[in-house]
Amino acid sequence: RGRHGWLLSVRPGVRVGVDVGSVRVGVAACDPDGMLATPVETVHRGTRDLDRLADIVAERAAIEVVVGLPLSLSGHEGPAASAARGFARELAHRVAPCPVRLVDERLSTVAATRGMRERGISARHSRRAVDQAAAVVILQSALDAERASGRPPGEIVRVGPVHHKRLNRGLVSGRSDQPHAGHALQAGHGVAQ
Image (tube, rainbow, N blue to C red):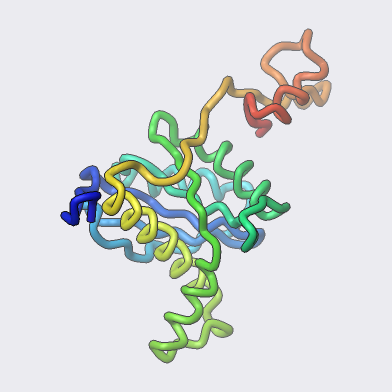
């Protein structure tokens, strides 16, 4: 509900939700009205994970991708959040011009596991289902936040110039005269692939 008590709307269009893990990536999507998030699949991390996610975004004609940012309970970013930011930047390059947003996902896996347990599903026996359920929690929370505020949730991932790894000299840059272009990456100006 907005300031005056009425329910605000969500921009129409399918969104894809992503829960980034070190081994697997849980994926969810919502309906074209942006009402309900549902599980899609679990993608194994590796050389083709970004390709598969880009395929899912294209297949569903998504208007944006929502990636969970695992902040600590105090709101600080640790190693997992840094890894999720890096993954989101790489994904943003891959799915451009479709925007990618980072949203706070604190306790999404806990909520997903609890929900599965309440339905009699053992999380221990179905880690893939937990990853998808966590992606559903992330995406549904983002949809609900937009509906409540009238604004897109989280923060947009900025897509800077694309940098390519040059195998012949191990340089990270599109130009051979910049042997230290990797420093630009640390400042958030691009992503090494």
